[in-house]
Structure formats: structure tokens, C-alpha cells
Image 1 (cartoon, rainbow, N blue to C red):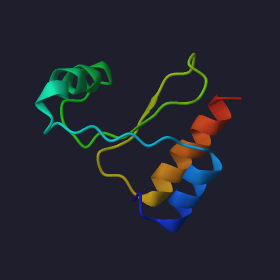
Image 2: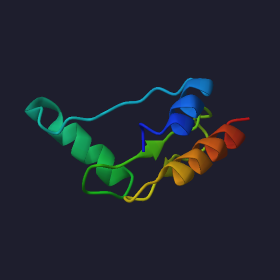
Image 3: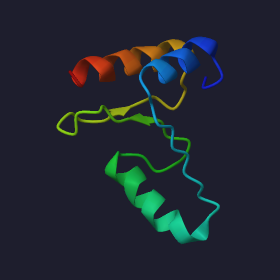
Amino acid sequence: MFSDPKVLKRLKELNVLLVKADKGNLDVQDAINADLLRYGRKTIPTNIIGPSNPDVPAIILPEYLNAERALEALNQAEAMSK
């Protein structure tokens, strides 16, 4: 999904920062698990879009994610951040 040209283009347009958590790093496992629980998840991968407006809740994407749904969520986050 993150290799889809349309998604990559939209990520660039919105100046999105992609963050990848590595549970293989033992020093950060507790922090990653705490964040997952904060968003109601227990496993990775978990995809979350945080709108630029901190007063707006994050968008938790479904576990099975396709390019169309990712684009919808990016557009939703943009609209919520205005």
C-alpha cells in the first residue's frame, strides 16, 4: 500500500511524516506496546494517521489496508486539520 504511486504522491503533497516502530528493538518495546493499547490495538502492523490539528482524534486504519482506503483517510485527515 505504501508503494502505490497515488498514495506516495498524496503523502508527499501533504508532507506526511512516516514513522515505523520496530518491536525488535528491546529498548522501545514497552513504549510501542503502550501506544498500541492507547489506540485500542495489540499487534503490529498498526497504521494511524494523526491529523496536524492536535485537537482532532487520530484515524486508526483497518488491519487490511488498501490504497483506496489509505487515500480516503489522508483526505479525511486533511479536512479535519483545517
